[in-house]
Image (tube, rainbow over all chains, first blue to last red; front, side, top):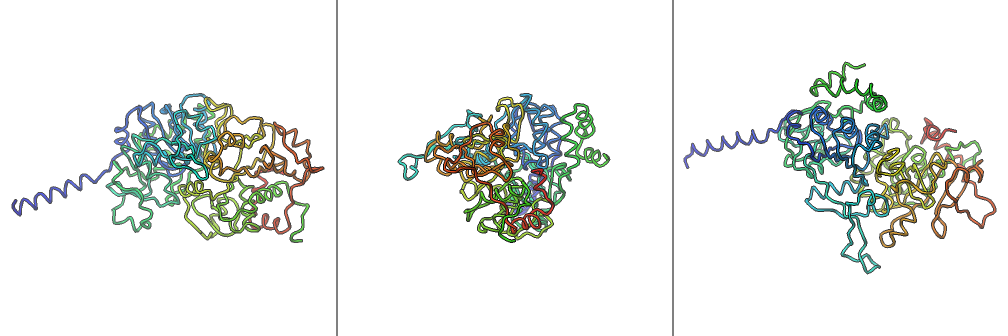
Length: 308
Length: 264
């Protein structure tokens, strides 16, 4: 190998590297990777830091029969209201400032969707098991409650270790892995290659959603150079590694109307408007046409801006 | 006046003190009340007779200090953060057992089974509520108390539609050692205070709030409540002291959120 070969191949490698690590995509390109019938995990918590621009892109697609796994908020509500959901897996579904999610309630009360309702800690362990490629993790959560009767597919297991002073081991719930085809999460900041930074009070379980999924797509308020992360927050805020991330979407106000502090708080007035549409089919149609049918995230933001 | 019972206390303030009393004796654990009256009660307990409890700001921190209930207020107040405690850490605390939660119940029965999930069963509920949330894990791991601001035959029912948080009959069925961390300590309603200190662990009247009659409680309860046979009459819930009223009114709830949860 000559010197010139070496330098040529180094340059080629460097170019390939640059190409391989730029994972930028649009919402439409992410949705093009999804298929009907998939199990999709959505990060955030209630009405907090939800990847709403990606959720709305799903609403506009012809995807259907989805299984949605989420610490549920308006993501589940909107997907139910537009008939995208075959099954919802959740510990709760809430809009936080509005405790009960009206669109989700409507879907439940009409029997439109199947559900796997879990203790929210058991839900965490299901994600953790999937992240660690374990079939289940044991927990006491669910023993004695109706969680097991509601979900006959969840089994118990006897500990092989005795529980002193007893001679036998205790019976525990074997919380099955919540394996995801795809995870969608929203971060405050990301770089081109998919490292994600949260700047708010809680990461929630977004790292586990990413790890539990075959493919993860991350939207972020802003894409910044990797070197700039530390100007935004301490290294404790760098909790999503690009090794788990397949695509990055820059989506300013991408979590609207859920909160995304410190970038913005929840748009409570908009959330109230959204919630009220569950009672009124005409209002729902107007809301859908005005906001959800907007062909892009930019068009959606314009519609939000121009609405009184 | 400090230390003497006051008679101008509202029902909501009596309930705050009843919630605080649920935490008496708790030491190094997370005091985790949910709802305004329970939160004021928890903070009152820590500010007075249970100083060793730690307290969550309900966002992501365990915080010191006495400050007003309500997110908007607490954001304005400089809080001394003792520990960073995002949701993941809260689950760790739940599983460690170092927690006493005081939460709501849409329905509760004589064994202390709680429902916050759905009315009319779970297959196709008449009314979908919050979901199981953390109730199953809470009950099997640490002490729990309940706050029911509207005591009626719709909330105190013979049988709950869904068991979110299991009560004593379910724990008897489960048996030892699985049930060893379960304790439903107290139920506080707008009418009285209830516990399970009975031989078969069925719900017992512990005290009635000032001005509440036994008939009123019986008429509004969908099952038979146990009563202490050794007493001629049912005890009256302890009234707030002057110091407690001052803390409630001036420090912990100056905007009177307690009355919004429990109209006088």
